[in-house]
Length: 272
Image (tube, rainbow, N blue to C red; front, side):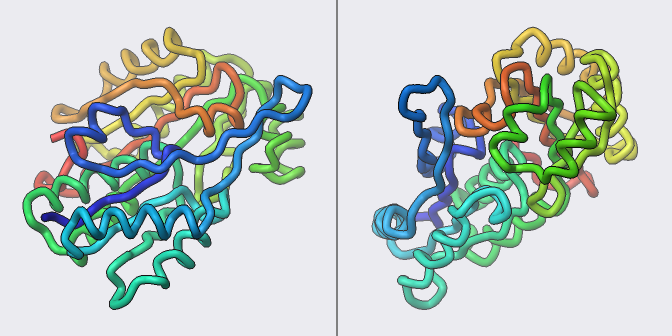
């Protein structure tokens, strides 16, 4: 049996991909506030993760588990995963410090799972996951700033800058933190800037792009068309709804873009 790949629901992997590649996805916790429409989220506990990893070790015949969770700066899940991994001997459970969220993490899980299905060992699966993450970037266009400000995922200074300088900001996940990188006042200008950011980083090479939207399917489709017109041959794009626990923090109308850039033609694409 192959190495088992485990991630959490924030990776946003489509169910058909999860089934095809045999990836285990553990749902993060979504909690409704009493008497309010607002919801909040909570990370996974070490006990939950010990149980999940143990089940996967059983399924994989003790070949090992590679765990990829959202950035430690964004959730307590990563520290819980490290505690859980320590329960098992001989580094049989490896926890990758992703520094990211969304389909950047999902793409790393996909590439690792593909190699695992071909018989790769735990070291090799970890290496390809970390390499994929090193070649990735994630941006998110916010239709408004209030939801993410209330969630505490951005600093007061960043929230104030976004409010003063732009009504529809673009944030980038950098080393697990959300930073303001685009100051726009309309969705059209924001999407133009998002395309520029992807193209600048791609440098003419193929790229895998995942667009995730929160109740903004039409806008996501438009951005997909814009990217499709300019990306290098061999690129691939997928668009899908934003995972629920991420959507709670970004607010309605948000559109996220995760990209994995190919440094060499032989780089393993998540959608090959």
